[in-house]
Amino acid sequence: MKLQQWMVRTGCLALICALLGGASLMARELFKDTELRGELVKVQFGQRSFKLKRDGAHSIKKLYWNSRTVFRFPERLASWKDMRTNVQVRVYFTKDVFISSGCYKDIVNKVVIHPTSDPDSPEYNK
Image 1 (tube, one colour):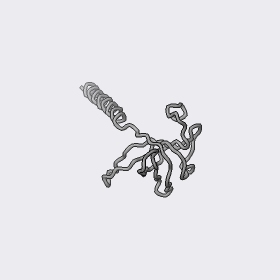
Image 2: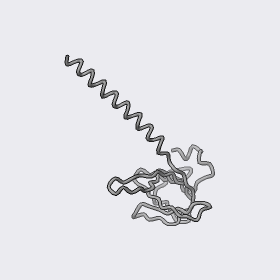
Image 3: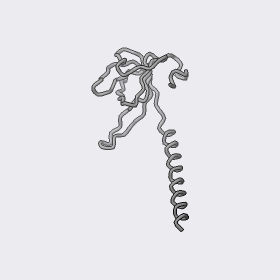
Image 4: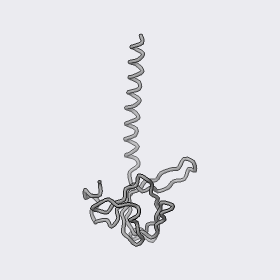
């Protein structure tokens, strides 16, 4: 009797784990990164943010980075310290919601400083 109960509980737990894993994969597909390219207008290291003037647009977008953000040059890794104004960058970001305030912020996942013209090159995907 105890063996059957253990098997039922283990089976249910395995089913729940499989469903949650599938839901996680679907969520990753829903929240794809948005790509922007432009010139850094202002970098605020204390706020972990920067303002980006997009190519061909007159609007300026404020973006934030966190500890998971990857900074790189096309051929090697970089750091947030390499961010300078009047430099061309390509950024990949998503909108994150902060539960405490309910506000959305554009969180950058990757910044490529001095990008090349080909975003599909293998260097971008490291």
